[in-house]
Length: 66
Image (cartoon, rainbow, N blue to C red; front, side):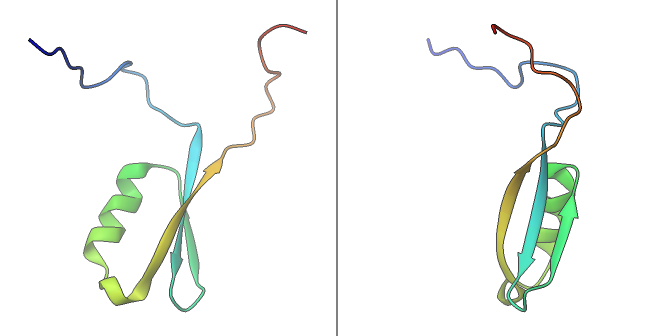
């Protein structure tokens, strides 16, 4: 039997932003993957170019070894 999971956390995932790039050079930035999916699947395909995943800039010090 193969085990699977649907998610690892109930907390919102917010490490990235998503930049939607259109064929004509316009861009739109979204804070959630769900938002960009809605636009991607509803826009005419010939108007879309690609999506870029952008790391969020946090003012929090990284945790770990020094």
